[in-house]
Image 1 (cartoon, helix red, strand yellow):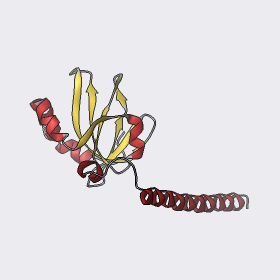
Image 2 (cartoon, rainbow, N blue to C red; image 1 turned 90 degrees about the vertical axis):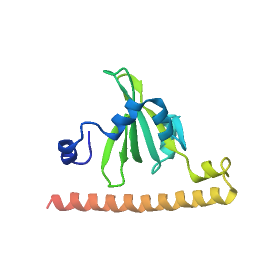
Image 3 (tube, one colour; image 1 turned 45 degrees about the vertical axis):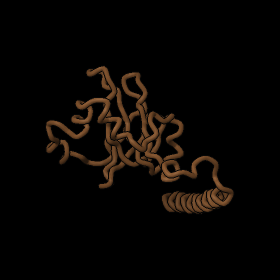
Image 4 (tube, helix red, strand yellow; image 1 turned 180 degrees about the horizontal axis):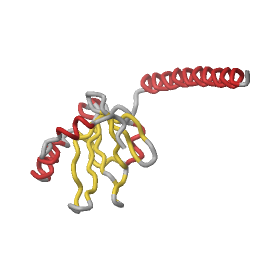
Length: 160
């Protein structure tokens, strides 16, 4: 299911896309595309990576092989699928498994992972993360209160 209207793209889709070319070239070209990516990450790890760039491989039953996709930025995670978006804010869904095979997700490494300093978080980073979580929880509580007030207002005014 697409979240945005891509009729324009469907009508103008070229006979052979960039990903078709990459898949035809084989493993070497795909490996080059996956430089600086952590390959085949555990699907449970995705929840820690909202906003990260994700490339993926989906199983093609007809071709009996995985097909590489250039992917996009992780926007949303659901039980059966994830939502990615591109730089034009177009979104699309990627099933976590297809035709009985798990989709292989590859995450772009962070600067910290690429250039060092990875591993354990510094104490100040932990404190900052906790503070950010607390601030977001406060915002969520405020929004929940607003929603409940609006629900009550609607209920009270519908009766009149």
